[in-house]
Length: 67
Image (tube, rainbow, N blue to C red; front, side, top):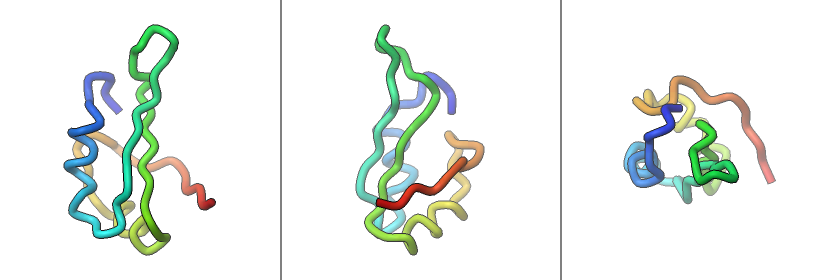
């Protein structure tokens, strides 16, 4: 992910998915983006839909973590 992308820009991309819950960009100790974002969905079906989404900010998803 590009370092200039904001959480609001990412959220706008994922809000079209009904189970979208939140997005959080990871920051280093100097308040710079690490280029990683954590996107939370309410259920696995919503996550599966998000994986199919062609998000202009994220070239691909790396992994799925369920809690």
